[in-house]
Length: 135
Image (cartoon, rainbow, N blue to C red; front, top):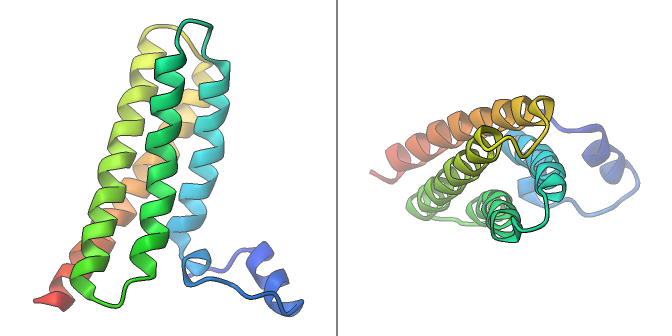
């Protein structure tokens, strides 16, 4: 678990830090959320439905990671991590469709896809480990 500079600074200043803030997957997901929000913001008028769905899916990833980290039961942790993975996959599909429709900057798409792939990979491993502990 790598701790970001912001989390380390919060600790030094006596600011309470939540468990999820210390997870690498949360840090990557938070960065992904910001990246995806840039894509959503750049979508043209008339594509509000895509903008809303993309933002909801990306936000759901971050929230499911936080909820999973707050669970005591390994089975419940695995469930939240799997839900986060599904939301990340949904966000990735929205990014791919926006790209194929020529609605967004390809550099932003490449970065979002990279971050989403990392999040999915991390969540798959975390859910698998939690399921093994639950068994």
